[in-house]
Image 1 (spheres, rainbow, N blue to C red):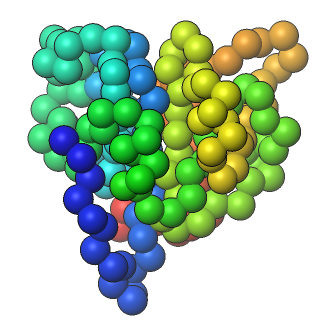
Image 2 (image 1 turned 45 degrees about the vertical axis):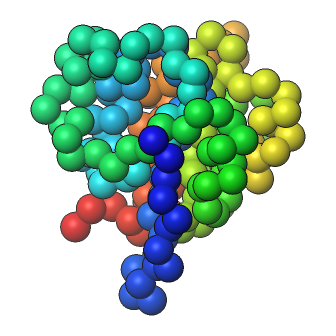
Amino acid sequence: MTVPDAPAPHPCHPPSLRLALYEPEIAGNVGTVLRLAACLDVPVDLIEPMGFPFSDRALARSGMDYLRHVTMARHADWASFKAQVPGRIVLLTTKAATRLDQAQFLPGDTLLCGSESSGVPEHVHAAVDLRITIPLVPGRRSLNVALAAAIALSEALRQTDQWPA
C-alpha cells in the first residue's frame, strides 16, 4: 500500500505531523507506535521490508484494538516513501548534533525512526532534511524505537500545537 497524493491542507488546519518507521524488525514496537499514532491522530508510514509478517500476533497484541483507528501506509522501499511523503523528513538518530530540545519542528514534518538493530543506512542519513538526537546519560546507547518516537512526537506536537483537542 502507498500513500495517496496528499490533499492540499485546509487553510485553517496545518498539515499533520507523521511518523515513519524504516525497515522495522520487531512487531511489538510497530504495534506500540501504531497505537500511539491512533491515540494522537498521527499518520504512520512503514518502509519495507519488515522483519516480521505484517499479520504477526505480536503486532495485534501491542496495538490492540487501536489498529483500526490509525491512518497507515506501507511503502515497498525508501525510494517510494521519499517520492510520496510531503514535507520535511526529520531523522531520529544517535548520530546527530542537533538535540531534540533544540530542533524546530514544522507542521507537515515526518519523524523517521530507523530499524531497531541498525538505524538507517548512510544514503538515508544524507537524504533527510534534519537529524536530531534525544539527549541521554553518557554511556547509554539508545532508547527503544517506540519510546524514542513517543518522546520526539510529543515535542513536535507541542511545538506545532497539534495535540488532539
